[in-house]
Length: 149
Image (tube, rainbow, N blue to C red; front, top):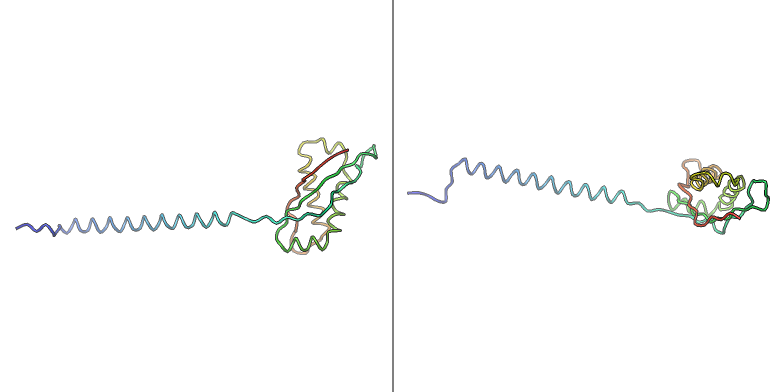
C-alpha cells in the first residue's frame, strides 16, 4: 500500500534546505532595505542660515570713486549655536563683509566665477574675524542681490 502523506527523506531535506535559503535571502533583503533607508535619512541635513541684516553698500577700490557695489548676503552656518554667535557679533560680520567688498575692483567682477570667489573670500574673512577657537562658524555665503553702479 502506498502512503501519499510520506515523502522520501531526500525530498524532505531538499524542501527544508530551500526554506532555509529563502529565509536567509529574505533576511538579507530586509537588512539591505533597512540599511539603505538609514543611510538616506542621514544624508538629509538641515541647513542653518543667518542674515546679517540690511543691504551692504560700499565703493569699489577703483579709479572711479563713484562706483559702488550693493548686495544682500545670506550665510550658511554649522548649527543653531552659530546663529546665536553671529547675531551677538553681527557688527564683526558686517565689518568683515565690508572689508572684502571695499577691496574689489571692476576687473575682479568681470572674471569668470567672480561671485563664487568673492563669496569664498567673505566666508574666510568672517571666520577669521570671529576667531572661533574650535571651528569655523560660517560654511558658505550666498548673494541674494548683487548690483554694481
